[in-house]
Image 1 (cartoon, rainbow, N blue to C red):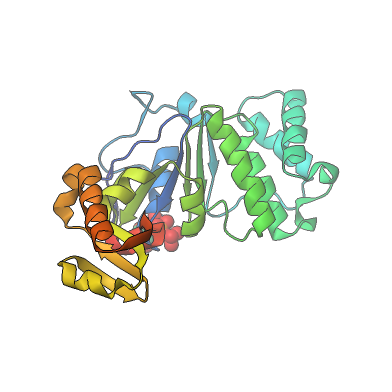
Image 2 (image 1 turned 90 degrees about the vertical axis):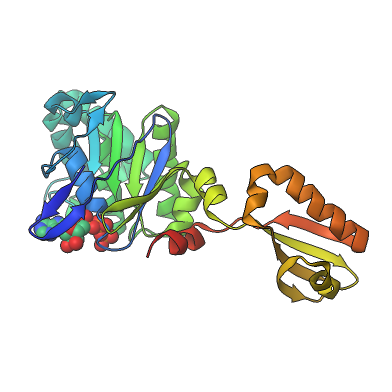
Length: 293
Ligand SMILES: Nc1ncnc2c1ncn2[C@@H]1O[C@H](COP(=O)(O)OP(=O)(O)OP(=O)(O)O)[C@@H](O)[C@H]1O
């Protein structure tokens, strides 16, 4: 999909997929285009080119109304009680009033707000209002979840509650797409990633694959008695500190990583006692800095 606002190209031929049962983290710097992409998926803004497919078919109103969306600018009614509010959103999606109330109650329980159902939204803390906002996105049991920064402003316990809730939906087969700047959280929660940079997808797919494909092959080793000799071994030694060293394999090693690792390990054991040998898995923050200019 492509979307322009005047001379700004917010989305430049963006293409990615979300899959059933998987949590997809949508990351990118401020202004990268995440919110715009989510709005296009939900039909809130029209795309200029391209299209969004749901189960292989172009989106229509029925499929869109089966989606759950938590927008960036939260939109609840401050004076309504929590339960009225959820029943209202349920009605918008075609549920009957009793069914809406039942679902609303269940969700409030799940979110730890069961005893507040009769309170007005405005009397809740911002973090608790955010829990209600997620409940509003879930009340019609959506078939796809699209959440814009669902974790921003939440305390660690609320983050855990929200994360568990999303995981349960994913485990039930719902594709979950959420944007976040909290990369440690994205790393912890996501199966798949989509990284946007200036309106383009710069990485997409299973998080493990992105990590493996994008990063140098580095190993943390601890050898006896001192790692200094490794430099004379003709290895790419990035760092030595007493018995510890950081070694990088040539990029070609990725072709047959197991063999290359075993060769490296054999060289190390020939030269001394190996106490520790482990691949260094880069953090998502490191990958992010690498792929985002
Ligand atoms: N309604 C609009 N009118 C004009 N420009 C817009 C509009 N909406 C978005 N843009 C522009 O499109 C680009 C992408 O914005 P978008 O809000 O999608 O980014 P984002 O990745 O969600 O950013 P953030 O992480 O800051 O929320 C930005 O340059 C933004 O200024």
